[in-house]
Length: 462
Image 1 (spheres, rainbow, N blue to C red):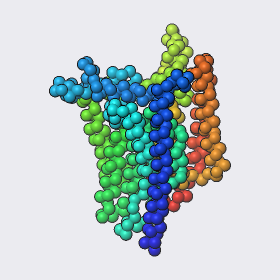
Image 2: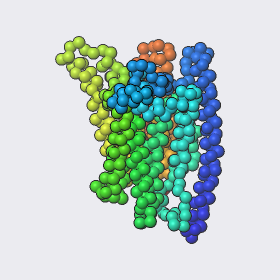
Image 3: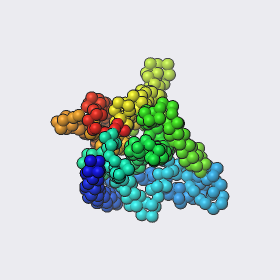
Image 4: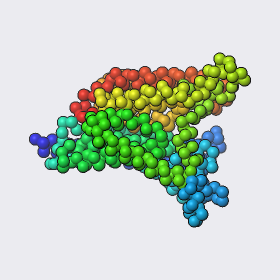
């Protein structure tokens, strides 16, 4: 009986991967076509009202890569190891000499092939993006010693994965514009996948080492994700809640996961700090904790921050000055955001499963953040396919939720168009549209919580 069940699962697995390669090939061709289109538009901006396809962040990253790999005298890395290497002829530059470079040096290091040809770095980003659905759909091979169990952690649904990510025009556009968000999404999904696979390992001596190996690898992946972009640290309570079911609240496995994550973080960032010094610490981590961005974005905090920066009161004792000081303080947005996000990871993981808890945490982090842009939406899009099987929603309800969220973005983009391209004084309208999108996002998230039915899948809650 088990053999027949395994055979059916293996047949489904082969069918899924055969179809996936067709979809991935199609998506890869679209990526490549968009990259050539981007090169054309960027080369002839005068034909497109002076606009360029490639995101300005990509140009910042490339400038940082040039400074890192082709430094001139006086542009060397400022860490003690960087100076030591420079004196011995190994010239490593300082990417933080480029204004607005707020990334880890790992990013220009990864995208450095673009210094050889402009398309190579973007092709690499596209390949990383295409690896994300592979992880989401990954299912271990079944053998006689590893039969299918009733409590088997399921991969994400086939078409949901490819429609939400692989063939999603939004994802294709963001990636081919040079936004490097696919890297952090890949690392987060890799961490989740490794923890999902750790459940596959049957808890008997023959496979306990495999289970522990997956957990150790997940800890390293989490450390890399936090090193690349600080926000994945929000998943720590969710991972703790997940691991405590297997190891106990303060069991050895929990401590092992935490220690491996911490040691990996210290090793990676210790090496980076020794090469690039204080600028690395300042621009990679500290800047984002106190960042106050007055440029228009989706965040409901945008307009108060804008006012607090451009119109400070001359009398510090007035009520207006005190209110502006409150809005200016980073804790105004951080405290409610952190309370909701961290608490949700601990509370939601046991009843709803790890993927849903991570999804809720990510959406909450993004919509409550003091800076919110379209690129951030990619962070939670990849977490949608794993939770779809446990959502009890009718097609009509799904359509309503999607249209509500898209309508909220459309209204905001319309207001932003008037501000950016028509040069109208539309700051207040942009802020109002941002509040509308915030409200729509909160409503959609609440509907998804109400629709969550972990028992619907018949699988273990991972």
